[in-house]
Amino acid sequence: MVPSFPQPASAAAATRPIPGSYGPPLLGPLRDRLDYFWFQGPDDFFRRRAADHKSTVFRANIPPTFPFFLGVDPRVVAVVDAAAFTALFDPALVDKRDVLIGPYVPSLAFTRGTRVGVYLDTQDPDHARTKAFSIDLLRRAARNWAAELRAAVDDMLAAVDEDLNRAPDPAAASASYLIPLQKCIFRFLCKALVGADPAADGLVDRFGVYILDVWLALQLVPTQKVGVIPQPLEELLLHSFPLPSFVVKPGYDLLYRFVEKHGAAAVSIAEKEHGISKEEAINNILFVLGFNAFGGFSVFLPFLVMEVGKPGRDDLRRRLREEVRRVLGGGDGDGGEAGFAAVREMALVRSTVYEVLRMQPPVPLQFGRARRDFVLRSHGGAAYEVGKGELLCGYQPLAMRDPAVFDRPEEFVPERFLGDDGEALLQYVYWSNGPETGEPSPGNKQCAAKEVVVATACMLVAELFRRYDDFECDGTSFTKLDKRELTPS
Image (spheres, rainbow, N blue to C red):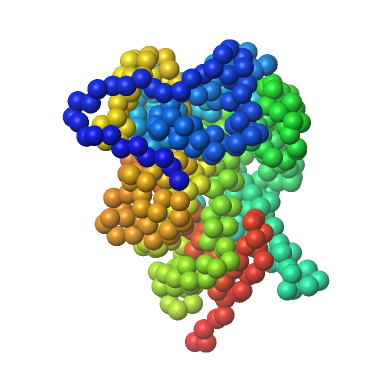
């Protein structure tokens, strides 16, 4: 459970020092790094320190650190409650330049020397142009979004069905949906967002997903607990030095040429309507496509399918199926398209999506560097002095399980966001680098695709229940797919 330490309410509460210590040079950051990656894991790392300090705001070191991350200062002010977390969204308080994944910035060589929009602060003159272009790209993509998603989901489910049907023992059948889902995400994003069909380039169609997986991993692994290889090898091989970009350069160049040739219309919009050079436009498109969209969906959508498909959640799936088919028209639910308008009417589907985003945000950490000295306010009047230049690190999985805000915060409650009371809680759903009630704009850092991500997740759930009466999952594998029984006309 997230520690909560209410203080006596006061309009002008006295500030207190931020508890915690960074420890001695080298040894303190190394100790915290080993706790974060090895001895505790990220969740326990933040929970234990909040409990030890009896505070949801405290000092700690965040990886990557010693020995070969030169110029990286791991010292942060950690924030794990919903009230103090909002400071990270205030452009007047925090600078967002080069803090996307913390104090560590991957080499610009991963984007051919372009500092893409997500690494820019709102006061950078280039930020407004690149953010406006992203919003424009998404607005134009909305015309074909649902149709392209449905076509890609068709291919994904056909592949999964085929795997299940090949199982020699139907009672023990299992089919992983992870790679088919990633291929689905990649193909539909290329077509809807960039206007480029991967089928036009055989290499991109075959290897594009794997190129993006490697490209993402090389940038993120120094900051992530991986768990694929045993410790201490993970620490020695993956968390001790920046990973090189040259490994993926041929693949990135292949995707660059693909967008240049087959996404020329999108590139032209950036050049003619937003004043962005061709090279910067392509690199920003690839970052939005590969990092923000493909990377985010590859984390979030498998969690969504897994949560809905868990054994024992038969009643939830029944209610979701009934809602989807009622909204789409007719008892068989095949009367309409599961597009943006339709999923807005699926209240339980949307609430379920929000609940998965609350419990499993695609990006667990948010960062911001204090522009000036300010007072960080938490629940019950607790107030802390933050100094100019200090890096705030918000851990979303705890902030969005704050018991001062959410009832039964550690439980998966799909109905949580239904009704007026449920909608009021959306202001505390922060997955998009801002409250769910906020609006992305060129003047803030909230995810440009905030609405599109929720709608896409709802569309995926709707497509599953359009085709199947029920399904079950074991991790990222389907163990049951009961095809829809058609109602006789």
